[in-house]
Length: 509
Image (tube, rainbow, N blue to C red; front, side, top):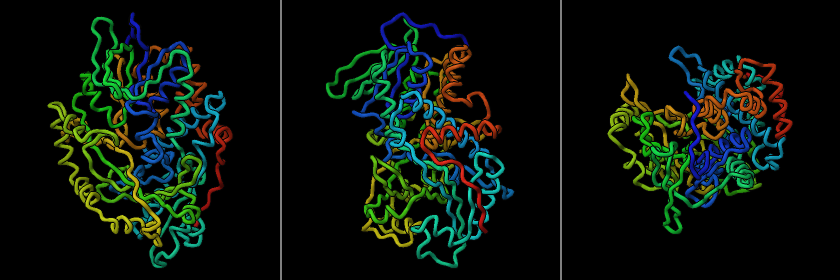
């Protein structure tokens, strides 16, 4: 693909739709690689990172596949597939490299405010699940990225690791857990807002809040793209010209991608899933739990609905959440419209969406059950992880809205994808990010993929290569297959970000 010709116009080189972690990451990368690039960001809300990137909505775990059991499925022969977990762990290492670079450059002055060490744990009960967890542990130990993981079935050890989870639990119930001390808690809201504050102060960058992108189309006369945006407070509209457009609007990306009418967008649909948390209001209980404890998802549950008892640091204060409880809403954004789903249905995606629905009847059944839950039902789910939980100590908090990708499939007609996907035009002039988990934690690797797709000629240049290697030292290498490099980089990023180093592995049966 040939290098795009810059247009002769008054407008930014790059226009970013949405002020979340994805746009922040791409904007900072481009500005660091080429300080002359001009960037405009348009966000419909009044602050950055107020949708999925916000700590109270969805993002926060620092997904590194240490504890998320849905990333290590069990195959028909009983073995555990660790390939996705390894890929996600490597992606998170890339994110830490980029953040470390920004801290060292003085771009981020408040690393402790957005990232800190906290153990990541997987917890299961029942003989069959215990057997699975041990197989998972064995499979992950084949890769150095998971060295230091501890496994135990010993109730005394587990009580020391997670007292709330083990106190007053049935002593006859088989239980097991893994623990990865080098897990992290990441406040992506704080990180995103810090990145945008720095971006906004740079020459050639403008950040516009309270604007909704109403339409976009190719500019036949000038090349690139034209966008029509509306200032929500006044209703005033204006048109903007840009060479490259990134649609990073979370659940709102699908509708804008459809408006672009690029051939690559056809056949994509979206399935929205809402969520809720139980938030602990008893500070004495919050103080007793210091881990992210993940369990197994219910049959048919989407990945972001994997239950977990989650310690987070938000606005300088330790919080404890349990959930999320899934639900269904036709909104694509927490602040969106109930018409989002109906308006997204087109002739090109109607068949894939219908077929994906037929293939995911358990998911539909699961969501109906979740929507019908009573407070007592939610308490019962919490007590599986915290037997002594009392409803008076918890309040319901509305989480963010996620939109799962639906796409054409030759064999199935349509499939529901649980992950993230970059959709880009053949000429690289526009790209959109669709999907959800692991999302924010792998933003850096996602944006590296986007750069290779949309700026292929630029990426080959000496300037871009040098800068990419400076920002991400493992760039262009398979980190998962290079223990010497990986361990060196992990040591460095831990030192820069103030994280703990790799512990000594331990197994207790």
